[in-house]
Length: 247
Image (tube, rainbow, N blue to C red; front, side, top):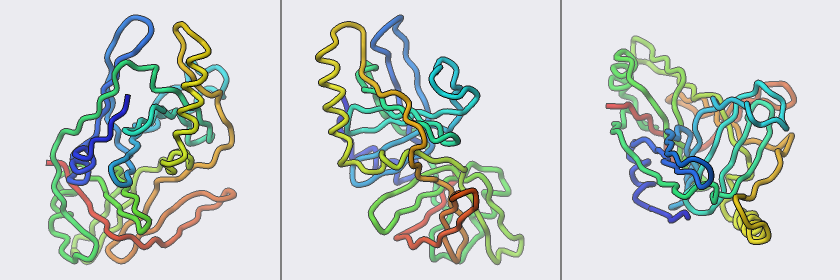
């Protein structure tokens, strides 16, 4: 189903917003779409997830009341459903859909890059209540794009501190080359069970998650996450860090 589209990654890099449009395979036909606010890419492959706002209703085999999120990718037929707070994960075959199309829309401008000292553009965008997001390119070749939740710019323009939204996704989906084995297992299961059915795992508990919560200033980039009940702040070296503002 999925076909890599390098132009999508180029558009995401340029600050456009990523969306997925879906059509269901079974039941009464419908179309649905989501903005995928939390994106990570490597080369021409990406995963994108929407915010952790999906109710657990209907998922009776997990603790109720937790917030879930779906993640979609452009290179293999897997869909990931996860609960960041309780660290639960479930994988589906993308065969659940007859259509999975990605598109980008909306324009943004880069208003700050790592190494720059001019904060006039950042101050102006915060003062005008524009939506902000960040792009982080890591030394290992990943690109992370996610919304900024809090941005504080000092009025004397001497500095700023910014925090991304607190979220995360299963560590497994960061490893792109490992997913085709599960994809093939789903295909094998599907071939053995005709009818209205798509393959999926049960909910997997206590899974490792990668937390997408970063603290950014002009001087440093920190990865913040919980470990054994305590907050950990780890200094990160990145190839580049950029802040975008919606036009």
